[in-house]
Length: 251
Image (cartoon, rainbow, N blue to C red; front, side):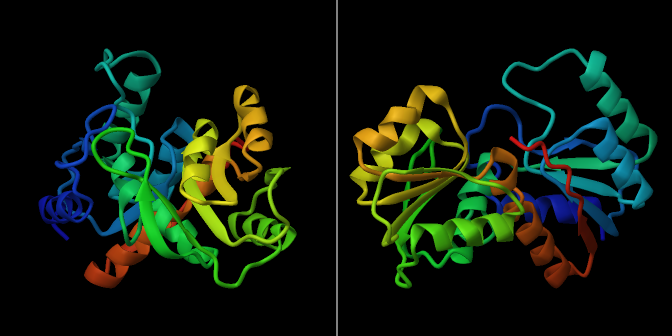
């Protein structure tokens, strides 16, 4: 399909222009290749990920963590190498960071909530101008051990658990990526258990202080689900080929 048509759809569907972020999102690298038939999906951008996308003969690399953050850097060094690689192979780069965390259908947190049986979703935590995290009820009321086992299995991870709450999970808060410092907020929303990505020593005691179960499933692992859901959506809607490439950081 035409790249401009695809980018226009993604910008609208993900509300790229409405959601403030730490750097420009959407089409970050535009190459001479204006036709998109194959899309490589990944969480991050690195030389090996770009090489893999090129081997797949992808026309676009669609990621959660793009290459433009905060202040615009010089197109040199590691950033320059990434851009040169993509330009040389006609590999367009599209990034959706907070927009993909916040999306109600294919967003990381909405998908995680669906995977683990969370209902009656309430949105919370706005790092910029929109909430990106969810909290809700878990009607199945699994044991903490059962929930952790399901998380490890579905996300292919080894979660670190702080079991300071009840043994049965009734209300779960979910914030993909880094959310170690949001334990108090999750507790205030009535959660007894909190699923997030990477851990932090500085926030260890908060779980104990607030009597919360906190499950640190990995920053990377908790953010693999959004790009995959978005890829499936694009395949269904437009018939473009998509494939997720897994490059876990173990963090």
